[in-house]
Image (cartoon, rainbow, N blue to C red; front, side, top):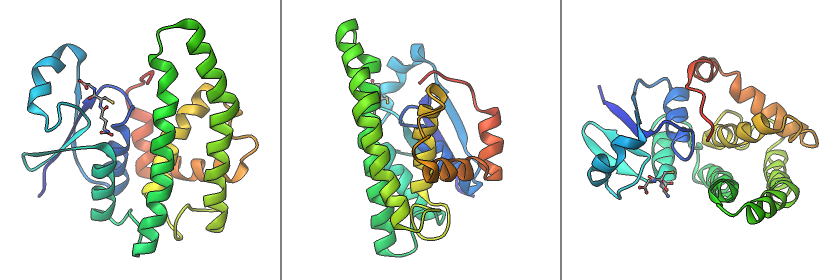
Length: 203
Ligand SMILES: N[C@@H](CCC(=O)N[C@@H](CS)C(=O)NCC(=O)O)C(=O)O
């Protein structure tokens, strides 16, 4: 049996999607949550000196989205046709771009600049990106982002947008279809069980 290990910090960050795909697929994996103080020693052992890293039978691979796509294809969560894979990817890349924007204010040190960035994020970026995602969802009938079952697209949406909902429960008020999709993914039995026991982390 293939042995999978996910190496990442004890945060959701960019690594959570790798964990979630394995969880959704019902695949056992070692969840190696690296402590910050251990990182300098481990960094040179990672392919690009960063995490998340997926280790498959002792071989390490980097880049969260590349890993997520690989696992999704491996376990039937990546789209059934080439066009469906493209549809999954357009959702995933939209969310990945958004995640970069979402974390910018978090790492800003200057308080004034941080406040400006948060204002722009909340008033412009979040509604704009949710609008785009809602169009993708409605363009596919409104239940799933791609095809007629859960895919990497739904799981990555849940991963990232649930973090917004935790901060502001009204964020999806104007996007009922997105809210329903999010709840459906969170209620998948394997995901629900994982979410109930995963460590609570700020990021
Ligand atoms: N594009 C990469 C980015 C990876 C990345 O930025 N990793 C950060 C944590 S989210 C990291 O390892 N930081 C520690 C370091 O660079 O030493 C991915 O999506 O996997």
